[in-house]
Length: 250
Image (cartoon, rainbow, N blue to C red):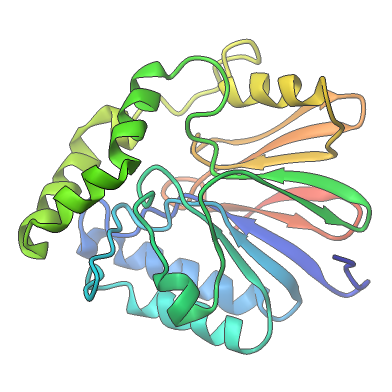
C-alpha cells in the first residue's frame, strides 16, 4: 500500500468496551467513536488490534447486545471506502464472520505482514507470542478448539454471555490483569519475540497491543517495537505518516 502525502495510517487497541460494565464503559465508547470521527478525515487505513470488546461471541443468529455507536461508526467509515483491518485479541478471540459480512472488515486471527511505503510491518494483538505465558497459551488452545466453541453455543446467550463477562473480568489468565508497568526488555515477551523474528527477516515496525502499556523500543538498528497502550487509562494510538511512526494520546 502506498500512502499519499496527505494521508495517514492509524492504529488502536484494547478498548475493552463493556468492562467492567456496559454503563461504566459507555464514556470510553463515546470517546473512541469521537476519535474515529476525527481520524477518518485523513485516514488511508485504520487498524484495530484486538480487545475492542471485553467479551465477544457469535452465535449463529445472535451477537452480544450493545456497542451500536462504535459498530455504526465503523460501518460508516468502511462504507466511505476507508479500509479497516481487525485483529482478534484474547477477549474477542471467538469472533467469527460478523465483521466481515456486516461491516466488510477483514478479521485476522494471527499476526500478519504489511508493507506501506516500502516499510515492513508485523502486526497483531500480541497475546501468546514470545516466551513464557504458558498458562494462557494452554488455555487459548482449549478456548479456540472447535469442540469448545460448539459446546459453548449450547448455552443460552443470557447465560453464556453473563458467564463469559464474569470470567473476562475475574480470571487473570483471560484478562491479562498484570501490573501495567514496564518489566524491562529481557522480561517483555513481545520485545523478545520481535528480536527473535529479526534473526530471520527484517521488519521496520512491530506493532502490537495486549500489554496495555504504551511503548516504543528499538529492537534492531532499523527496527522498532511499538505497543499501542489502551483506551482504559492511556487513550493512546499510533500514527504512521508514510515514513515515521508516532504514539499519540487522545
